[in-house]
Length: 229
Image 1 (cartoon, rainbow, N blue to C red):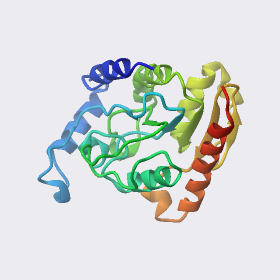
Image 2: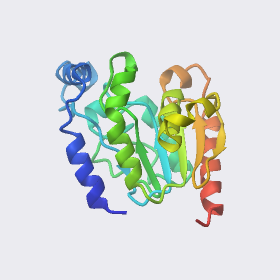
Image 3: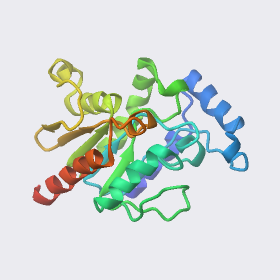
Image 4: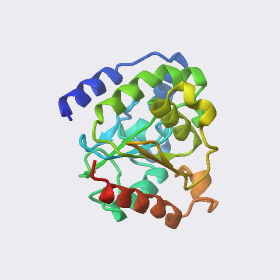
């Protein structure tokens, strides 16, 4: 895998202004900072994927959080959702540390890559179908470059649907199993696993527990340890 290729893609991505609503919103959030981060310089641009270019595990979310990745410029970094995700990745052996606060915190991913189908923060965390489709070329190009990927973990139904579309093509939409937590789908060279998203809506209510999330990444690690491809 060429690290340079992913770097070139990221450089093109961060200049993207395809979706007027998302451009206006990400810049509005960056200019109107949350009080806790008033001293921070917000990223306020599309957020590239992050991790090991030779990753066999790909974790797929939804979109950057307003005061998380839209602030820090790194996926799932600087917010409560990221706290849950990186703790789980650390326990499973994919992350060098259990917390991720900013791009300079020393976080290193081993054999894992984190990305999302939509790269700009959407209002109310709800991108439109058109915005998803506008971003699909970035998402697909990035996944194409992750040539060693074997296991995909989709966090939430939005990430699941987008990953299914990439793996099976639009013609496979009618064959897509209904989303639920803990699916394990054998798609030939790729295994697709699903989890409820690590959003506060799920973690605060107990719909998703740390044990449930750990089970997903334990399964991912097991699959990678037994896959000889």
